[in-house]
Length: 328
Image (cartoon, rainbow, N blue to C red; front, top):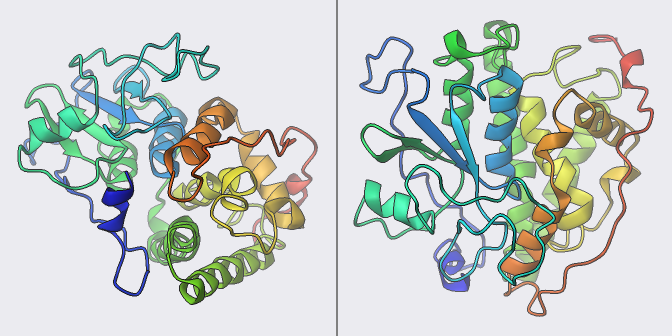
């Protein structure tokens, strides 16, 4: 795995994430050749990956469980990449506390997600990533970009959604939402990776400071507003959530983003608990998968592959965020 990540580092030691390989589009009217119909598409994800977890959250919030299938890969990625393994045992043969999420592949019988990539493009030689949205008809990956998948779930699949009142991309704040989402991606979502995967001290320090400068800005924003855009939750909230939920258990330790923890921020911690307690969201969070993936997969960062016991997080208590009204 180390060699694959080395392809994504510049000569100055900066982590430069690869581009998503498959960007075909599903449409509600079938104009793209990929119509949004039930039981045609299948989503491959990891509960450990923040990018994939965002698509899982969109899938759950919109109520697409009956329309788009879902399979979770094993959290431990070895030299063969993301794998589908026996749900009753992990890679070491021990009881898998992530069950019933980890599973074999019910659609294609793949043993590794790389098989889906090579089925789509026999010449693919990049890093195999999650999420991946598979088309049962063409037997290819339609899209492996989490941004695209969330947008398609929200728009193209709206007629199939059980929770049509949920709108993750409201038109009236489209421009502002895109700007904030880009900021959160660059400075926080990918920012922790830029700090964690760098091979140069000065590059690390610059990346780490950028992460906390951004967190400080959002802490101030959330002092006045329950969510990032007033009193409604949008996709931007969930992209931030996926990093915050992993921060104290992984990024603070493993990626050396250690100036402060999220629990040290009054508003960000309350905001995190507020989102975590939203109906169904706790079911999308699996700390066992998260910790085993990061600490056991990135051997160049953690050669011993020892998974820390802590920290113990309590996200179920009173958060007080409901006292805040939009813009107040």
